[in-house]
Amino acid sequence: MSTTTTPPPPKKLNHIGLDVVSYKGGKTTLCAGCGHDSISAAIIAACFELAIEPHRVAKLSGIGCSSKTPTYFLGQSHGFNSVHGRMPSVLTGANLANKDLIYLGVSGDGDSASIGLGQLVHCIRRGVNMVYITENNGVYGLTKGQFSATADKGSKSKGGAANMDSPLDLVSMAMMVGATFVGRSFSGDKGQMVPLIMAAMRHPGPAFIDIISPCVAFNNHAGSTKAYDFVRAHNEAVNRLDIMEPRDEITVEYAPGTTEEVALHDGSRLRLAKLDADYDPGDKIAAMAYLQGKAAQGELVTGLIYMERDAGDMHANLNTVDRPLNVMAEKELCPGAAALEGFNASHR
Ligand SMILES: Cc1ncc(C[n+]2csc(CCOP(=O)(O)OP(=O)(O)O)c2C)c(N)n1
Ligand code: SF4
Ligand SMILES: [Mg+2]
Image (cartoon, rainbow, N blue to C red; front, side):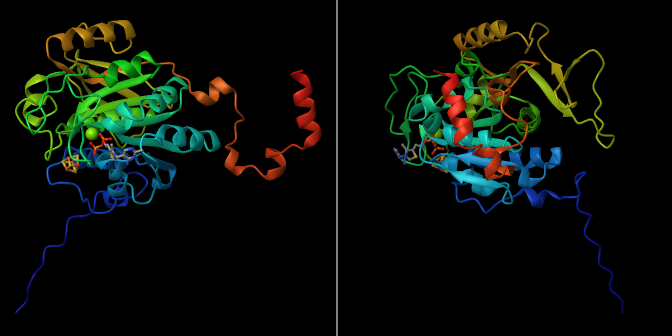
């Protein structure tokens, strides 16, 4: 008697020959249903689709459930888990030493909007080339549900107490302090998150993405504005987007008359399918007014909200040398006492 077994389907490989497993990390220890796990899955999918070599990514975080997540994706990438709220300065330093890596900062609303607010603001205004994601649940999940600085006024805690402080809108703030790519999404919307993260990774400047990510343990009840039900009911997407790499293998079709194509610096092209005829992500002042108007109506704008086409970064601003510092020998890094003396003399 002969038995036949169906061979397993071939693994899907990206154009550098890696399967999606190469972009995964350790097993999650977060609560089942936590929005942060969905964001990890979107990061994995984005890096797989972009065919990024895992060793070219440096993932950095602070402290919190959100800041634990880099353990659960990109297990072959560089990683640094910093002190609470201090990740932006560690990321800035790493970027200064080696500008050839892709810097991915992953943080929480407590880590970024409460204790780390000053760090985040200065990192953005310095133009550090990075993708900075806040996994925003409006609470300190790890320390059991205290309100964070992004909790909306009147929003209720699990115990029923109302938050009386005004919230910080990280998207408006990021635009105001100089982020050149600003987006917002929702952890339950993988179709929107993946292209947004891909485009942010291709953007040559400070890219900031705020992702509303419900905390099922402490902030997913009636009265919370970061709950699954609330966000689903109040979400307004300004655009549908997809990113097209300049390679033959990837083709995308769009309905005529509904797309806008944006050329990115590395030659890839970002396509936006506009839902609102008046919405232009290249107009910062209009984007800010649009955000404020929608917020006043209780609506949450998601999508690519603002992008500067000719963005530069900190290295261009500082006119740093072309080669990363970490490949230079001591002789190049330390030109000697005479050179230092000459430099000091030029400032007297
Ligand atoms: C200097 C310092 N202060 C306070 C804490 C306690 N602490 C740990 S995580 C956290 C808040 C985390 O909130 P968030 O960044 O929103 O992450 P989430 O757990 O909600 O994902 C706090 C206050 C700490 N670890 N270090
Ligand atoms: S406490 Fe909240 S943020 Fe932390 S893992 Fe659980 S659901 Fe996620
Ligand atoms: Mg939080």
